[in-house]
Length: 437
Image (cartoon, rainbow, N blue to C red; front, top):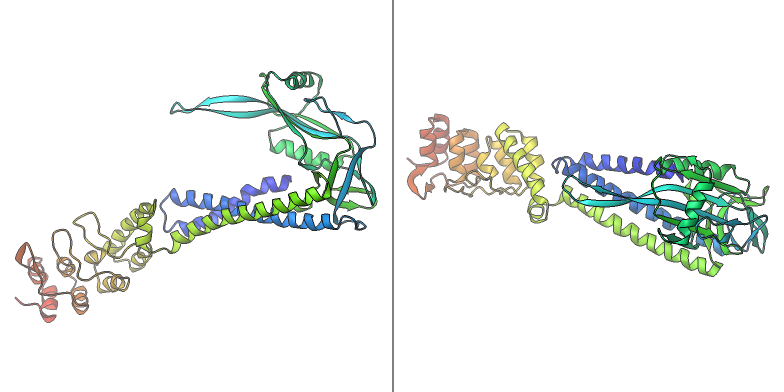
């Protein structure tokens, strides 16, 4: 139990880091980390739900075999009645007789954020567990419980300020000596040790905070005397008992309230619920990551949040075109429409290409050689202003009209622009490609 609680953030962190490695390319910061962490949480939830379903399947199979002789050292299921072998307990809040209980006593804190919004949270002040010496009376004989089990389906009560239960809680606090534990992880660590050390009788009470404020509410869970139960744990033939193997959740000691048939239905229902949770968590996480990594630019632009990807890679593409970085151009084109228009004059990436190699890459990805910018200049006219002879020859070979005239100013052609820029090599390349004076 304690190991799984400590390890889940580590597991989520490892998954998130692996996803971030791939998402950092398409997504800008901090969106890359946000998507990676959310997807990692969903994937870990899916895995945990799947493993829970597998455990419930195993427990259901063990329950169906509960009439067979128990195997020493193996996880088994026992169906029977809980019987006290000594004095019973009195639950601290309800005052009811029982064989075991757990409780939390808490108060509510109000906080106000910088923007003026108020919120409340429940703060646990005291908690504890207790277990009386008892056995599970079954057809195979009596088996002792030598640790405090995880409980499922047992009576739970909540108490508020004016309840008699809260008055009993106040009296319990005044008359009980509490151990000081750090909230949550300290309590789990102490309970874990107590589970290993107990000989069938257990009582642990923890103080979780240093505050002496007024407690406002409490929760209590009880194990009734003579309760019908099904228990799942490791069989110890030597001790004639069920014991936990706390190194693994799948081998934890579990006590479920109810007859065998009723518990079997609960386990089957839990298995189905776990399967649904696993699917519901897995599908969107994988779908979102796969979409970000592989969807074409037109799809990305159309979805909410797609502008983040488009904005980042539009800037990267402009820089890569300016630097004639073919690798950078190819990387950004994976996430963009090759005919997107930049804000300045609505130029397309092909109009900013500075070499024949860059133009070839863009055209191979679908860039149009016949596009025009907001001022009516063609791709070839924009290339003529850059003045690369190789680029002009390549565009002409791909069908660019070397004699196209600017609609708003007919004397303007690619050749006239090259002459204006005083680039004789570009002029020569255009004339050889068929441009007329």
